[in-house]
Image (tube, rainbow, N blue to C red; front, top):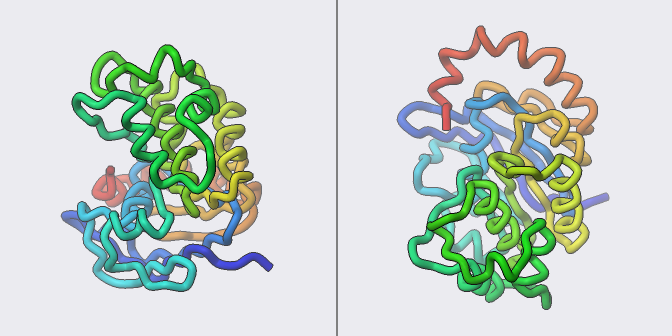
Length: 247
């Protein structure tokens, strides 16, 4: 029986309006767990809440990491515990070179992986990218790959990957699957946030999130089938409400 590494209990989170409306989620140590749902249903908000972003307010509920209540810890404190997040739209760091950005991540690494190896793992040639600046001349896909390389270097206990295929040019689902499985084999539990059913099937288990609530958790295949059968049918009905949860 696997141990629980992350537990979300009755979580209500708001921006200008309520977005998450009583989310319950359990993630086990060592698994890849997909959170599957249409755009604008609160998936990224859940990721931000777990990471401790100050852009949203927790109105009710708890977030537990390895049995510890982290609901009111800062993002920095959570990062020190071993939680990290690769954002759907990576932040720009003006004037910093790729090699320096990766070295910052390397400081928190639990193994001997180096920046060159991390870049190769995400399909980038080190000689072409290490001395380039993050905020100039890089495509969105290249920037996303570099952020995934940084996650490799940190090798956190749990990594939240928010739409990891978003903006990645010429990187197939199988390439992304290999990146996640490699990270997972290195000992990192992964929470995969996605609206793509083929990506969710990489996971062992999945949870279907709709209109700010987890409707069901089960095997990835089971949840994908439910999503395909029901979610697109009811999207147009819930759309006015869901738009408020747009991220």
